[in-house]
Image (cartoon, rainbow, N blue to C red; front, top):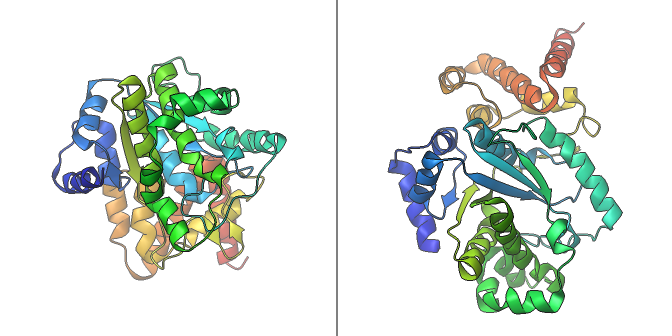
Amino acid sequence: YSMARKHARQQVMTYHPKSDFIRVMMERGFLADCTDYQGLDEAFAAGVVPAYIGFDATAKSLHVGSLIQIMMLRWLQKTGHQPITLMGGGTTKVGDPSFRADERPLLTADQIDDNISGIKKVFAAYIDYDTGAANSALMLNNAEWLDGLNYLDFLRDIGKHFSVNRMLSFESVKSRLDREQSLSFLEFNYMILQAYDFVELNRKYGCTLQMGGSDQWGNIVNGIELGRRVDGSSLFGLTSPLLTTSSGAKMGKTASGAVWLNADMLSPYDYWQYWRNAEDADVGRFLKLFTELPLDEIARLERLEGSEVNEAKKVLATEATAMAHGRAEAEKAANAARTVDGGS
């Protein structure tokens, strides 16, 4: 899979996609790695592809750091395919150790349910559910199949397909161990549970693609391997780049706290201001990823120089806020900002 990863990156530079989805992903900068770039593109061109991204319920809202994945699901639906948002009601009880220095705090079942209720509000703004069409989105919860697992049966049927040696070689785990930081047995099980999610989604809903940030590459590969071993399934994985600002800051975090996507945790005005204060070098990239403006209009905005760059930032702020909170709230925030800027 390391060779497949290298080959996929080479393909991105030269390949001319057949499907609208892969074309959009390429043109707007969403693609990092893919397990079978050409095979996946052909699947998209042939018919409706159900694809999922998992979101653990560690807070009552998602923040801007998750927005690139949300936009991938939105574009998936806009190009005629079926997005599946998988809530980690089960996996949140374990906690993803990927690239973390310490173990996540364990949440109660009630806390997890409350968090899922808050996160559902985020997706309602970006994705259409229950439309009756073939690309109508699904929102599922992996507690549906994980909570009822029989431990011994799961070890015998699923655990036998995992090599501890291989699991230890994944960068997300290896980096933690190299720093001599503890990795609990509970956390070590996370990648097995996530792999099993892919198998269940393929069996129940015909899902053949898992997407996620590039830090999820190892977990995604495990799911593909498990599906092949237990069911003979042909599955795909696709990852997006992990975003930082031009100065190296992590997306979704500011000095004052997380940039939440729910209005009751961060006002639309403050959300607008976050995008308005983007670094000059990031404006074009963010317009491609976090708005649906046509690429020719984005190219025009990218050419602005000097103080005119602020106009591009205002467009970014208004369009990104409209996506999250609606056009009326975005215009209200933009008008409030103009009043402040004018010294009124």
